[in-house]
Length: 171
Image (tube, rainbow, N blue to C red):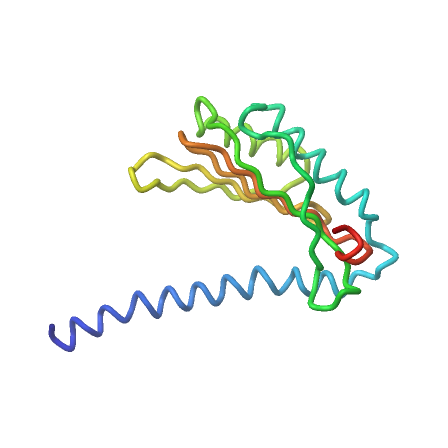
């Protein structure tokens, strides 16, 4: 292997590391800052935060009830490094594949946008080259949602906004 060939192999690694680092700082910066700058008295109650997340999950389930099963008890986690920064609730469920994953994701995107979410849709391939459709959604004061659908399954990851309280109170 020549030194020129070795040098070309380093470029993708540097590019990926740069993109990864910039993506992380873009995603985590605002979330941490927003939880610190919102006064505790202006946050939703834990009950409001959970019910808003469950309401959007119900709208997604209405598209295909076997793709999104009933959400179990959520996991409660702290919003920041200190326990007094609030609590958020998270769910992760796997359901049956929709009959047409692309159409399901398109319908889910429409539902999310109608409910004030900002969305980003992508398409990739599974190892056996079957398509995987994914939509990410969030918005100011809204849950963070990741929804993937393929011919194998549907996966929903949902995380509520930060609410007042401490995670230990909800275990």
